[in-house]
Image (cartoon, rainbow, N blue to C red; front, side, top):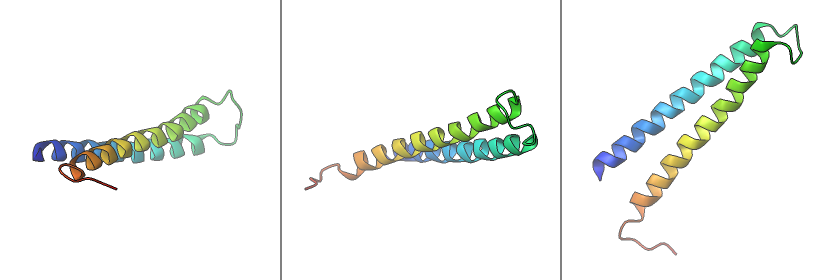
Length: 80
């Protein structure tokens, strides 16, 4: 069980780092060519995709961590 907890913490940390990296890449790509603000600007559209993707990555990582904490926190205990 202790190994499972370490694995989940490692997954959470990795997904957290990936989310922040995607956020940084998205911000840089959005600012790169902001003067041409249209849907034809590929760097802007990909940057927005990275921004949205970073939110999803962070949310999924947090959900995995919360489910695993609840699973191991309620072993042998009843919650009211």
